[in-house]
Amino acid sequence: MLTGKKWGILYILGCSLIVMAGSLWMADPDVFWHLKVGEWIVSHLAVPRTDVYSWSVFGQPWTAHQWLWEALMYVIHRRTGILGLWLLAFLMVLMAGVLIRSGLKARGVSEQIASAAGALAPLLLMGWLKPWPQAGVYALFSVYLFFSLRNKWGWRETLFAAGLALLWGNIHSTAVMFPLLLLAETAWKFLINREKWETIRWRLAAAVSAGVATLLNPHGLNLCAYAVGEGLLSSRYRESIYSWMPYVFGFNILALMFFISIVILFVAVRQGREKDLEFARAAGFWALALMSRIYSPYAVLSTAVLMGLLNFKLGAGSIKRLAIISLIAVPVVLGVKGFPSNLEAVAKKGGYPVEALDFISTQGYEKVFNDHGWGGYLIWKGVPVYIDGRNDVYNDILDGFANLGQTEKPIGEVIAETGAETILTGVNQMKDLALRESRFWQEAYRDESSVVYIRNR
Image (cartoon, rainbow, N blue to C red; front, side, top):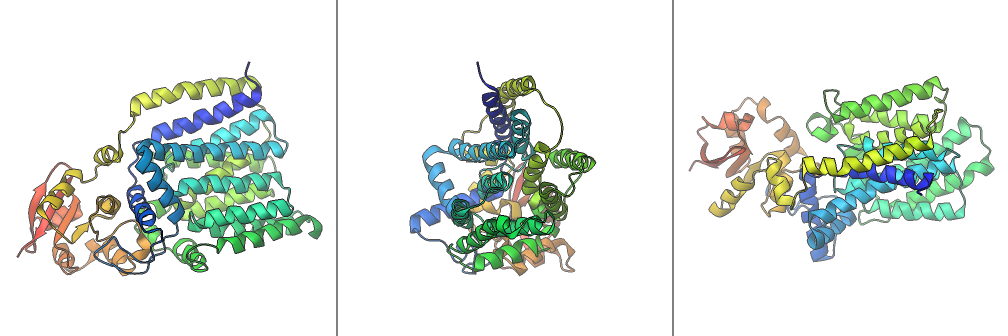
């Protein structure tokens, strides 16, 4: 007979597998270029400092802040293919759920409610789970949540915080958020909870050690400047980059995640928890997420923690039934979705210009002016790009690309002035419609999803 603890773990496992199974065909363009960067890092045993993938800003300074995860991605993909990449992402989201469950149990929450909150965490990450560096951040952020819930700080925790920050600082620039969160906790405990200095000094020491360890990365203090300038304080990406835009409330998974989270926040207020640190953290991240959906994963993980602290009843039999249902659902989702054989299959199904790019390579066309969302795939295929998801590299080019249809000059003329010799864009998209009559360009290839224009001589 399985115990309640094992059923709780199985429930989190089942929910994590469901999220992974439902995400297998997500063709995020960043995954492609992350793999290519990982290949460069492993081949050169160094971290790139300048752009080596575009023809438009080749040689410009570049902060490759995700280098460690990119190298890991490349090694895993080279040995195991796409299965290994998704297994890595699955382990990260599973770890997030288990850590939240463990943290809540250390807080005195019952086995059943802690398991329900731990299982909610991966479910709320639906739509965000991809084999990219941010998947590792979900697990690292959940480690922080675990220690916050455990609320026991000493020299061991201080050393662990430094180690966590060291790892985080070489996986993603969001590492600068970790010491700031610890500082915010310290201030909250002191000012709101009126705790004495003796009880908060080790948390403050952990914040300081994490801040110092965060700087131990190839970019040093520049990582902090990058994170603040390109992340928290920057609004330029929120106007043109999908994942950075303000939150959307249409008929989609994001709207569902928001609705579930708002219900949890509302119930928390009804139960008088608006002065709890966990409520402030969830509400704070949701305020950021409404400005830019890139903060959504931290908001939903914080909300899962808050749900575990609410006052409600859940029997052991309920967790058992939920675990069985979740595990049965996994093969059903896999049967409907299928499992991709490789990344090329994902790219083709995701509408990437697979055949068009083969045509460009065969014809030897160069200086390709590509759509932003296709840049990562072109980099993966070894084709120099005009623009891609490494937005910080492009500066003025990004602004010009976003405002391409708002210039007084015809689009064809504007693109010609960039020095491009080839244009690769989607069928019936704005550029395609504008270029059909352009005196600067002529159509060279067209299929169901993409079209290639070459410059008139």
